[in-house]
Image (tube, rainbow, N blue to C red; front, top):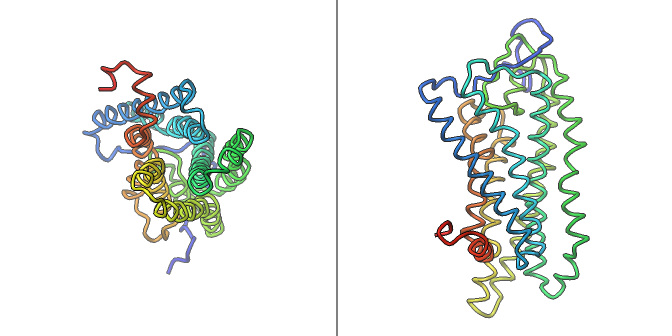
Length: 318
């Protein structure tokens, strides 16, 4: 029986100069359709998040900590999808889908850094809602501009040193003869599949980092919302409860979509990994979820809708 974490030898160890993305080459008749669909989604992500960034900067009613973090989150979403989608669109238009070893490492690094930053910013947004609802009288004092800037800076910078070392360790592994990467970007599971020898230590490290970056923030968010919901249910009026829920519901939906797909991808047992499922989940949290985020925040947030109606011509909004 093959030992856990042990990839069987598949040829001599080689010094790789590039990988070849298989991507969606197994459906050649759908290449044009996929290109058009992903291009539309990418443009929706860029325009939707850019619009949120603009209105949170120019509308005086949105100059609050909640929308400060939403502006950061929208900018992050643009960075996050731009790591993978432009390359995916390019590969759908050409036969040569090779990516250099260094470029693959750089893509993985920025994907992991932005993914970790998203986890942290969603946690900061949950903390903001917790203070606003559970300690409303102290909210202006606690969530002052200095704390917001420090929280945002911490969210953006915390993942940088961790993933420099982690990416270096992964790409320091010996690789076997095959250079075909059965994915559409350089993600951890498909890269480890090409590694030779014992990858058990790296796999354990993946779980440890996933717990630190994904599971702990998710538990903090969950704990915040337990207290938030408990506080909301104690409010004396139905109108007050509805208003409090409306300020949290958008964030809660985004958290469920992002963390749900991320936890399933990186924390499920290796034996349950399959190429098709990994690609589907990757599409979900790298493209589909970022597309829905601006829609969710615009449709479920009355303040954003009001700001949009003031900012855009009425015929666009309608």
